Length: 322
Image 1 (cartoon, helix red, strand yellow):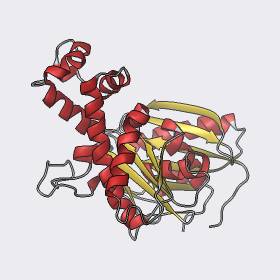
Image 2 (tube, helix red, strand yellow; image 1 turned 90 degrees about the vertical axis):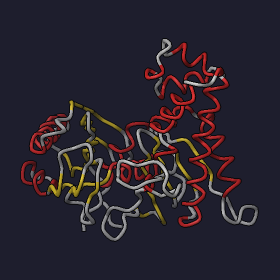
Image 3 (cartoon, one colour; image 1 turned 180 degrees about the vertical axis):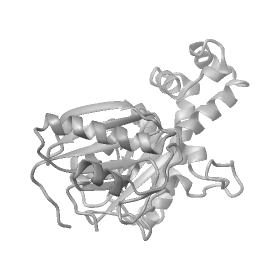
Image 4 (cartoon, helix red, strand yellow; image 1 turned 30 degrees about the vertical axis):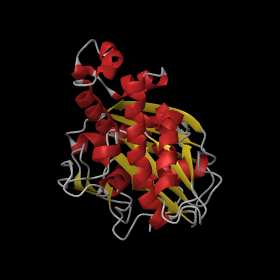
């Protein structure tokens, strides 16, 4: 894989609520950053905001920028050029690369946000010491990214590694994608909150969590559950352990296909640390195909936090689009 390892690049993480931009060195150091709210419902306004932020950081760099990488929460085509579909943005078959290149007169690459985060962790974070990595991001849903033999796996159409929509329960819960029984309906932050709220209505053990929520079940959220679990609350600990079990089971299925050296757990829910990682490891070890007769992937917590997508996108900007 040819790459340009000199000069600064700009990484951009575009989500439904914010656009974060960073000026990044070849070794992954963040030299400067900026952000603004995302005009998510207006496709042209999103591109204008990105271009304005890039110009702001280009001025900071004295004009010396080698390229731009955009991490977008959606399906991106194989050419890393067009956003085919973004569920939380007004992008439908949008030629983002061509639009930004014409505005900025810089080379631009577009990548799925979880793929970019996987690349960031592979290059500069929790997977920097291996050649094969599976990233699982646990937040509102479940995202994923895969690096095999030092190459980002994108699939035949560019939209591979949508692991959250692995079907784990036939005819299970309805997913936002339209299918039933997707993994993210059982192993995501949203799933954690839904199951906790449901059980809190009937379990005497939920008293402490309910107290934190002021007695209102609907005010129970992910950070509240994690904080209660960290404080040793048995009900909250059990909820996090159940989530970890679902995640470990899904990872075992993915490892049977991908055989990663390291599995990195990222996303907001990963802030629970070993409270989440330990049940993931236990379920993974119990359910992995051929367990006891094969090497087992190490499961690690992500180290770059919410900068992973930005840093990964900036680094991918050093790899010419095909």
